[in-house]
Length: 248
Ligand code: NAP
Image 1 (cartoon, helix red, strand yellow):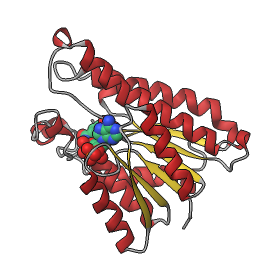
Image 2 (cartoon, protein in one colour; image 1 turned 90 degrees about the horizontal axis):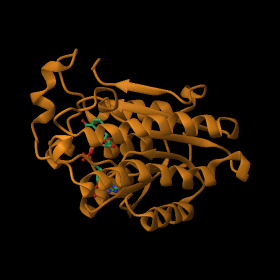
Image 3 (cartoon, helix red, strand yellow; image 1 turned 180 degrees about the vertical axis):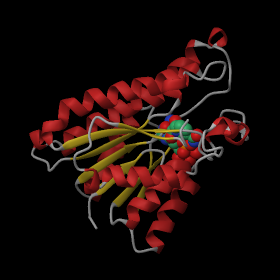
Image 4 (cartoon, helix red, strand yellow; image 1 turned 60 degrees about the vertical axis):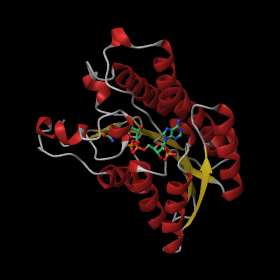
């Protein structure tokens, strides 16, 4: 058990929601970030409080630096920060690169890359022993798309996750001697609403036959990896990126 505060961006639905419930059960105080679905975020907080856990919901579009600063300010009032899960991420409708607008690509990069980097910046300021804090853990949600490239679907998304992988390694090296571990997770095809937001609700199930394990993964299966990487059981793991993808 721990009384550390963990911020989970995009903690209101999908993988972030599953992670919020699991880390709360381990005793973390959870800051549930959400972009717009206040009802979903409040439901996560209520579920945590129903089991005597502690959580708050904070609206934060990670595409906005002002929102990120407000998120961390709210977390500061909740207690000392012990961990960040950079989970918030978006996809777009399936199109080829030749049809992509600058607006689409910029939004993808702003949310998936700049948002994660700015959140990590704020977390390092609060967790580094260099700044008098006790250390902590940052978990970055990447995707197997970073390795596959997602041709004819969303190469921009895949490239954003490739950037997350490089960022994970670079930041991990930068702060390894300051008590902060930085790790990544590459989920495969996971059964969440992200596929519907990309215009294809059945995408994960349609492609399941391509997965060596012949099935989609669940948000809980990714959350289990998040919980483990956050824990002291993973105390010698940093700069590593774990595929949680059924072999994909
Ligand atoms: P999801 O079901 O679509 O949930 C997305 C969550 O992120 C929601 O809580 C949403 O908040 C929040 N969010 C969306 N845009 C945001 C923004 N601009 N700022 C802050 N929060 C935002 O997604 P998911 O499938 O759980 O994915 C979580 C992470 O795993 C993402 O980084 C994704 O790229 C990665 N991933 C997912 C899969 C998969 O197959 N599902 C595979 C590989 C990687 P609201 O509830 O307010 O909308």
